[in-house]
Length: 120
Image 1 (cartoon, rainbow, N blue to C red):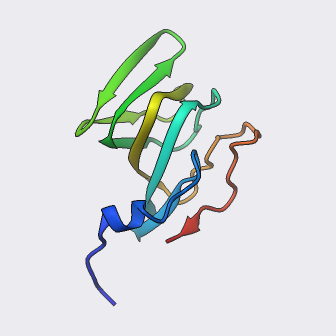
Image 2 (cartoon, helix red, strand yellow):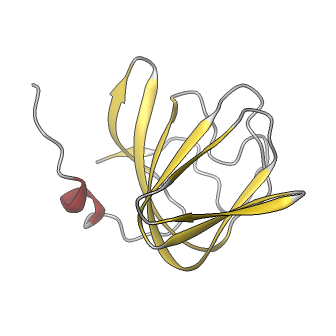
């Protein structure tokens, strides 16, 4: 069935940090929501680009040679193969758009790793 997805309502279902939830799929891609705070693990994705859209707050995307601030209403695309680490001083709400095959922490295994994201 085709229906509208209310992002605000979906965000209310998320209690955990760094645990993306799938809200839609299209053409082999997944649209995910997550709440994040603190620093993530350094990782990359050899074969997939990632899009991070900031719904609320300020995300800092760290690369080995620089940092990029991504403010509310802005997005950043991390190219495949680029090592990165998301960081958020305060809680940030993000929308992710990435291929279904994208592993949450790339090939790095950590306490943050989510092998199969939950659909909400």
